[in-house]
Image (tube, rainbow, N blue to C red; front, top):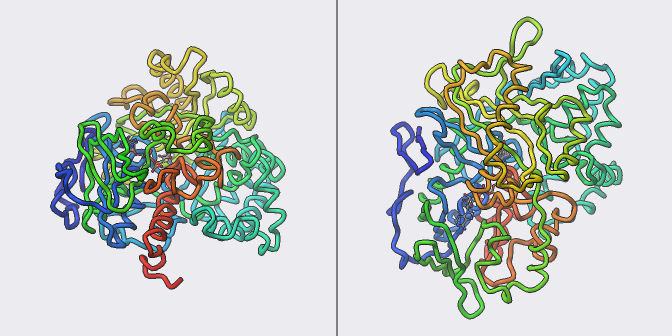
Length: 555
Ligand SMILES: Cc1cc2nc3c(=O)[nH]c(=O)nc-3n(C[C@H](O)[C@H](O)[C@H](O)COP(=O)(O)OP(=O)(O)OC[C@H]3O[C@@H](n4cnc5c(N)ncnc54)[C@H](O)[C@@H]3O)c2cc1C
């Protein structure tokens, strides 16, 4: 296994990097070296795009501003030696629908990537002492809903079947760049219930959940497992009402050894195909020659030129300042100026001697993924708390992730990593800087609330902790603009062909030679890999080939 620290990679013995070329991770490369594509930022999306381009024979250099690559898909010894924490994401559920994984297009298993699919999938204890557990076995999960309401047990099964029938239509749109595949509504016209699905997708998640489930425990579970970071009563959040069914199919998959193993496997793939991946290379400027983007300049003054294109995963709010404003077109600048942040998170990583333990019939249960959502009303207050800039200390919605239960390689023997993710506003009434004063207090309140459900997680079981407020998450990764770990809100004004900016949703930016990927682009954030594969699809077409040809599919 390869261990990592915040400062860079420490190569381990068990999993040797595959066929590292002349310039391995962390080494310097002469800026005179020639590359077809220069990639600015190494999130999982830009790494995925670079991996497909490398497979097609284009020489790529990936420049990451931080000491460790991966952005939100990164693992580090945040607390104590030997405790490997996922700094942001752990569950790669949506990636399993991407042809990258679903069809194993790049054979990343050969580059060290291995997934664990935990069972149970998700557990939610409630303030009245009851609980609902989602198991990989569908009948067992339906029985959990039926404990509260027979009607809700049947509703879960019916909605799952309905969703499975429409999922291929949704996936075909998600994993194609805007304008490259039939628009979703045209596709839905071929589905027997296509018109109903058009309505459902335009509804709010809350409307769908309220109409299908009668019991508040079942409603809370459907609202918060997984939690979508969007207020569930907002229009066009209808698809989130069905998110639990994605994890019913795939569980919430974890890369063995840490979330960052996905980023590392992609980096190995790029290097094995003639590319270079360099950490500690913040990009500060785009090189423009004869109106075309031909490379980038890093903070240390080094210049990297691209023979074919530059691919950026720099947040659009920062990207527009890296070239003269007049080159972007006014509609693009207007679109960037009006970009909205999303509902932010606070993450506390603990090194512990014990996992969370929840009381269940006949004993206790220690799941990898659990969540606290006191009631549907609590979920519905979420958007209001954000609008007011108010921190919730009494009954905060929380996700608790203890990867070491399924993957003991992430901590010393018998020890655990526990991540508590809360949902709190970046923009406090006192301003975002106030987070530095209150973050420990907020983390304490969240832990106190968790202990109401898992009382054995006492101070003696906690060896160390690191709190990352929404402001810290932005400091950790400038792509988390204003604490937006999905780069920005996902409402109708920033979805589909409006992401990142109306008229510029096809990854091609207004400056010729410059492409954009990552969570600012369609379909948005989370570990889907869709913006990455879609950007590669567009670039490969522009370079005179196609992604189907590159992965050996007949088109
Ligand atoms: C606490 C937390 C938990 C989460 N949990 C999950 C989860 O379980 N499942 C899930 O699907 N999603 C989760 N997410 C969200 C997910 O991590 C992100 O949406 C996703 O990783 C975004 O990927 P990306 O490729 O778009 O960009 P990023 O991962 O943000 O990568 C962008 C990269 O570009 C680099 N960069 C930016 N600017 C520059 C520059 N100027 N020069 C050089 N480099 C630059 C950054 O340093 C970064 O490495 C979580 C997020 C957080 C914060």
